[in-house]
Length: 112
Image 1 (cartoon, rainbow, N blue to C red):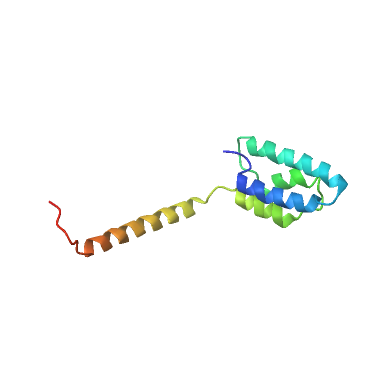
Image 2 (cartoon, rainbow, N blue to C red):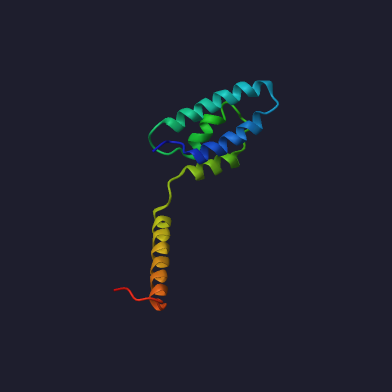
């Protein structure tokens, strides 16, 4: 399990491009932060929190939006077990409803 998943990494990369665009010093800032993100994406371990993400970005790009860091941190977290169970039960419920629906229909031919 990587510390920074691809969805969170993409959110951060898009905003980094916008924030550093049109600034000569921004090219260097962008390269430093993107290399940090690539390293975090390839590392195995505990998922990064908003504090971890901000500590890797804000020292280089101090005007980086806090909302984007929070959005990336939320995208980086594992799925809540309650959501997994809810999704699983929903799929099972649909399967049962589908089977009951098939049983109530008449089949136009007989199987031997």
